[in-house]
Structure formats: C-alpha cells, structure tokens
Image (cartoon, rainbow, N blue to C red; front, top):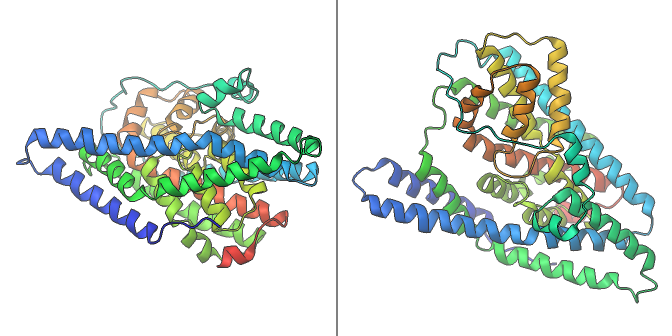
Amino acid sequence: MIETPKNLTKNILLGMLFGFIVGASFYYLEFLPQRLNDFFATYIFNLGGSIFINLLKMLIIPLVFFSLVSGISSLTSMKSLGNITVKTIGLYLGTTAIAVSLSLMIASIFKPGAGYSSEIAPPDKLPEGQGLYETILGIFPSNILEAMAQNQMLAVVFFSILFGIALNKTNHLTGNFSSAFEKLNTVFMQLVIMIISFAPIGVFCLIGKFVITDGLNIFQEAFKYVVLLISVLFLHVFITYSLILKVFTNLSITTFYRKMKEVAIFAFSTSSSAATIPVTLKTVQNDLGVNKNVSSFVVPVGATINMDGTAIMQGMATVFIAQMSGIDLTLIQYVQVVILAVVTSIGTAAVPSAGTITLVIILQQFGLPLEAIGIILAVDRILDMIRTSVNVTGDAAVACIVANSENLLDKEVFNK
C-alpha cells in the first residue's frame, strides 16, 4: 500500500495557522510597506495557492478515469454496478433533502432575517447557471476529449463506466488489458501522494490569500445568518452523517471522523469538491478500506451531485432573504424549496461559491429580490469553505455505506 507522508495533518494545520497569521499581519498592520504587501499577495499567496490547486486539478480527470475503468473492468457481475449506482444516487439525494429540511427548520425557528436593517447592495454581476435540461444533456458528451478538457465530471464518469463495461466484456479477448489500467491507477495514486506532500505550503498560501484580501471581518452585519448557517452545517456533518453511518454500517464514528480530518482540511482550504477528489479517493480507499470498485464511482459522482452544504446555504439564505423582505413563506413553499435544492444540486459545479448560481433559481421561483444575493456573497467566502468540508465528508460517508452493503468494505483497514 502507498503510504502517506508522516505528520501530514499536523503540518497542514500549522500551514493554515501561519497563513492566517501572515495574511492578517499584512491586512491589519498599516506600517508594513505596500510593496511588500502586494508582493506577498501576488507572488506568494496567489501564485503558490494557484499552483497547488492546478496540481490537484491536473490529476482529477486521469485519476477518476483510470480508477473507475479499473474498478468496473474487474467486477464479476454488472448487477453489482447497478446496485452501487442506485444506492449512491439515492443516498446522495436523500441526505441533501435532509440537509435543506434541517436548514429550513432552524431558519424558521430562529429567524435570521428578522429586523435586518442594512441596505441591500446588489452584486456587480449575477451568476449564471445551467438548467436541468442542460445538466442531463451534459452527461452524454458529443466529444469526450472536450468534456475532459473542461472538467465535465458527469460526462467523464459516464464515459468511464461505458469504457469499463466494454473492457470487462472483452478482457478475455485483449490479453487481460484491464491489468494495464490497474497499474496506471496505482501510478496516479502515487502522484496524489507526491503532490499532497506539499499540502502544508499550499494550504498556507490559500489561507493567506483569503485573509490578506478580506481580513477576518467575515460576519459584518449578517451575524445571525452566519452563526445559524455554521451551526446547521456542523449539526448535519456530526449528527446526520453519524446517524446514517451507525444505522447502515455500525462502524466507529470516532474512527471515521479522525481519518477524515485531512480531507476536511483540504476541502476547507480549496473550497472545491472537485479539487479535493484526489485526496478524498486516497483517504477513502487507503484509510477507510472502501474497495476501489465503489470509491472510484461514489467519490466523483459525489463531487458533482452531493451538495449537502450548498443545500443548507440555499435553504437558510432563502428564508433569510424572505424574512428580510417581510415575506412569509408557506409550508407548500418550504416543500418547494426542498425539491428545488435537491434537483439543482445535481447541476451545481464543484467549484468555489457555485451554490450562488442555483440560489438565483430558487429566489426567482418565489419572487424574492435577487439583489439580496449581494449580502450573501459578502459573507460567503469562509462559509463556502466550511460547506465544501461538509460535502466531502458526505461523499466519504456514502462510500462507506455503499461499500459495506456490497461487502466491499475492508473493516480491518477501517479500524487500523
């Protein structure tokens, strides 16, 4: 088994801490020369963070492709693939529905938008997204190379499944060609380890870039909204995921969260489920004991359709803006928010702040002021980082549940 660098989690946390300290020093200490500030912002934090993210993104498509193809080509029954698919999508949509329902319930009780006094500042430009039709059509690419170049994850997963099935059926005619994909998958997992060895430096740059630009004034006047949203995110990740893990697998909850620390920190610093895929795959397979036949499907699909953190934000933001505007949502409208959040989560890109795209759709549905998104965006940066950590934790939890149900979970590795 490929080994992870020692003390990686500790070093990542130190990198994050130093990023906060250095970034905050440049932001708050006025006597520091502006030239030095600009140099650090551009050539240390910005450049270093961008290089680290690019290195992670560089591995996403080949890692997903080789991992998924090698996993499917080694399956003894195609029925198993069907079972994995149904269970994965069902669990993802189910947890998303729970997430947005929890958010709406908490928001309706504590009323984050009541008495909000600030003027609504419209954003410079409203984000644009694609509808359900375009999302479904995008699963079936006309040009797979173009889809890979544009990181269209659902299209890549679909093609990889088809290729894996074809390889599975012709393996006896191609001289066990699937073994080549097994070896290539091992090589790319080693590449992941090599790149995450530099994670402490990458996290230092990413956190420093955020703090040197925006400081630590994330709460502003939407304090109640921010606190409630963070509370619901933590409730969902520690209560909902713990319950479904215990009910469906009876695995140790403590062990699961301890092994997920590294992935959660990665997701927090990158704000992108897609950029975290290499690290999530490595942890789910090597540390949680999920067979690659399951993880290679569940994790990439989760990075695309499992948006529990985003759904929580959408529910909270919708109620917040409605209350702020003096509009009382009915029970039927609450149900509509749940349905919309679940459906639109499928088309939400696994990139920073992508949830604001689908929030536009929900606000338009209820005639709520779109300019209020300016308030959400003003405090969204740090919240988006937390949401991404929630999303990847959900990906890993579902991977464990699906693997356990298919007897493809190595509990010795999990408990090690």
